[in-house]
Image 1 (spheres, one colour):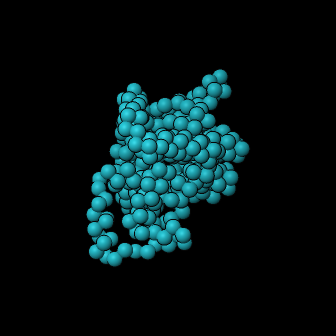
Image 2 (cartoon, rainbow, N blue to C red):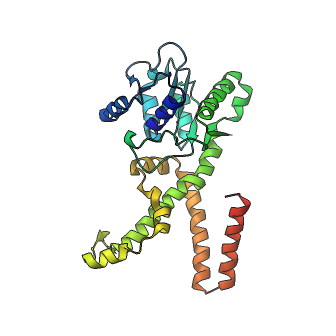
Length: 292
């Protein structure tokens, strides 16, 4: 995501001076070799010199919190600080606790299951939505309002559609619209592939079928399963962070999902054709009503 943002900025504003930091040096070397960035940032110093400066934190949520705590001086001279984390309450709270007053939380609602700068997509943000955090108290604070509008303006300059939200509402809704779908993709992959691999439920070990049978069964995997579980190839480290940092909302969304799953399970077990058909029609109707 960091390389995608840098490349999108380079494409739209070629004269912008872009610096990047990554704990993995080869990622910085790659971005330099492809002219995605102009230089490497030094986290031991203030991240900005003179003039306007925007810092975007493009690392997992827990790493953002840790970076704020370990390197608060890096943000001292920044005109604006934002992030791309998909959990907002914890990050916003930590920015305030570390006196990073120019921080405005963001969440571009796009991404890929692929990682690394070599998979950067400079058109990734075109026409996508971006959540920008605006608390109710910000509405009466002209300085905060200006920073929030600057943040929104940046994402809009990358052709994103900005939606304003409080951190609390963001974390509640994205638990259902983003975090739960990823969790279900992981679970669907586990349930299906455990069966194909003939996983022993008692000791959690795989007892692989013979090669011919295994090849036959994997041949049953079609586009529906691949499409539904594509996001289960996303970074386990990233999603461990998200699931734990938004735990209460995700548990609530998972409880609701289990309730819905048990309702359909009950209708199937009892052979209730009319009830099952009615339930599925209700779901289809709600999708249409939501404009999905």
